[in-house]
Amino acid sequence: MVSYEGVAGAHPRTWATAADEWHALAKHALGAAKDLREYGAKPLADNWTDEVGAKAAAEFAILADQLESAYDILLAVNMVADGMTTTIETAQGTLHAAMDLAARHGLEIATDGTVTDPSEAVEEAETKDVEPYKSKAPKASEVQDLIDQAVQQATTADRLAAAEFARLAAQTSVTDPDKALDDLQEHASHVQLRMLAADIPVGADSATARRWWKGLTPEQRKDMMLAQPVALANLDGIPADVRQELRGTDGK
Image (cartoon, rainbow, N blue to C red; front, side, top):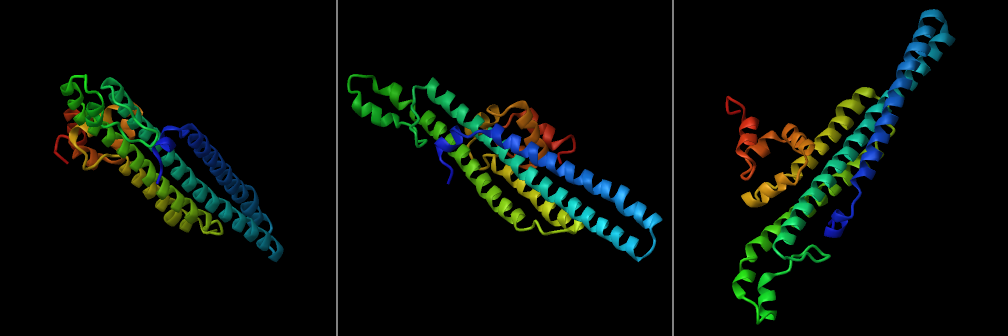
């Protein structure tokens, strides 16, 4: 399981850079495949019609298929890395919301992600007024819920990404572009959506959901609305106008 410190100290930009590099590799592979077909297989088939020419053209076609398959596999890796970027950024946004709430109410977050229990502070501070400490208990619970949400979403994404990377690593011998697209890239796209879905605090109380939403950047909110409209539309704590936008004028 990913730790509180692991989420807080993660570097989403590193994942973003990796995603960009895999995408660039994919584009190179697709460009090479097109070049082989356009300037290799096609001219040979048109101008060198004997057995030797046909064999050479066939070899170019095989290489082109391999490179096009590589394009789809590399793009699948890009999708998963991009999903990790979004998840880490979202989780850190949730942690920042938790930290801000804790600071405003005089609460402390330990290195393992647990929040200082206000009732314990009361017992140790005999000369202090009890009521202000007792009033912190609900806020401490809210801070803990936000931390748990961030750690859980990062843990889920980490598990999904590790499994998908292992799956893709075992499929590098695929040379059928249709299989690479329909099986590998499509599966990776579903994994990416599952990562985004795991970022949403389904089942959390409205206060946690509200603070989670406020902790997202405008771009992250847009991504979530596009990827998981149903889950957000039914999430208590999301602003009413956002939920209405997701439902649309016909309620669907």
